[in-house]
Image (cartoon, rainbow, N blue to C red):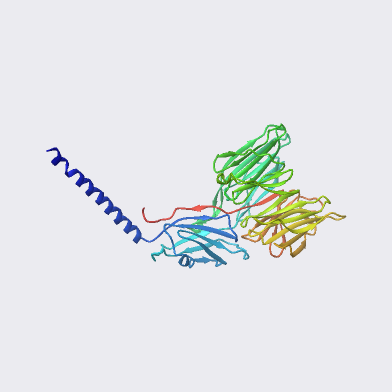
Length: 461
């Protein structure tokens, strides 16, 4: 009796399993017959061209069909990648002065077309400047209509500004008359991607975080560096022995403390995989990726300092100081010894390179009766492609050359040789023409465009 009563149960269980398998097969077939859809679009900071978008689809796509998507204005571009991840890369050389409209098309490997999707993309960066204000200085952002928006309260003095490499904020180091230094971070919400043209706009202000506030005289210096992942390295040096601290601030409040001893400012590599550590013997390259912890340090002996990273190629520009007081500029290419591109007695006030490290710019200052700054444009072999005197203008103390591949412009701060107030200046990367803005400034940097879109209407999963 017991065997007869229990025998239907295995058959019932097998029947249920078969029904579930059949239902899964039917659902799979339905999904395979549905068209692919767009899952996400993100601005990619690591690029070899002017700007890039990473596009993620719901299934592997035919790259040639996606490459037929329309871009307006039709600036030179290419599509890369395979499977469900493709990248749209804008080529360098043609400045972009307005938002782009991307009409995304394509079909998957089963020849099923994607539902046409229109995207608006503004790859242009925003201009950041530290401007004199009242009895102090203030960090501001230039809006698209030309107005200036304050990003932080007035500080007595701002020593450094560091935009996050993904455009999600900007950090600053300030100082007051009592030698109290502060490290502040203004978070920003970018509006550089949208499904509607009206959705584009200036960054929206997020929280203002105080990352460090030293007591009077407790900090000797503070230095900031960011990579294109948006991580921020904070380096603090105190007067007391063993009071130095270094940490990496990731998204939110996550901190990763680093046990490092450096003889100068640390610099994060743009790709986020390492940092440059100044030592008394030269420069050292340290990996930050936990999977590379066993990799030995790479050392470059000599009195050298990093002047610029060519962020899309792994290249960098270094200035080397020689015992006879000459200076040289070196282009460092991965897996190759440094290549000297300039040598002379002039002071190297600033340097920059394009993403590929193919074009280099130097501002040189000759010592003499009438100090004058000279702008040089070189190729990667050191051949001079252009030369232009800045005339009555000279780089302000602490000014950098910050290159924007989207507009092909260099950003800096200049002042007259008489020592008047500094002004924001833009320099054409191709023609070396100088445009000085009316805005007084102490420091200036580009804030790169950034952001991700995931709000697309796709089939229910």
